[in-house]
Image 1: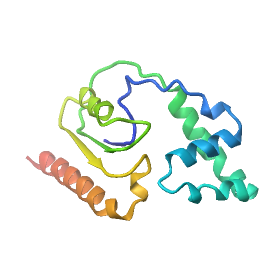
Image 2: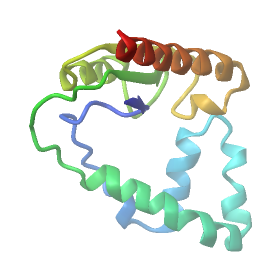
Image 3: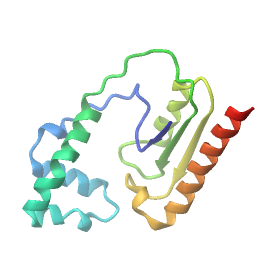
Image 4: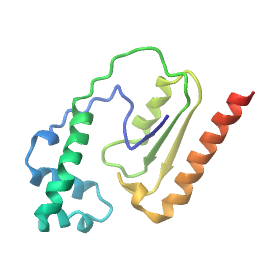
Length: 143
């Protein structure tokens, strides 16, 4: 399991951005963006906002209304990816994903904000983390 930019399930999100107006949703995307100017197009192009914001709102609704139900830990390794400057998830919170697996856990930290994957300099390193995790999983199955 790969998780990115999310605290472990025990950390409940109490925001209600998904219930607010489009303006608040766009402001939140600007806050999280590495380049807020790239999000401003949603203010300038209402047709584009009509296409994009429903999916974003649904994503926020899922995150903001999810409540973890305790159960047995996963039998799959978890790799948590997070940035060193994510305003939604600290590395400590991401590290708590280790409590949700009975097998391996890895925490990978990258520079940038919540959308660290948008930064071209992070793409090779993220790819390496994923490749190593998948290779280790395949090797573990063949033993």
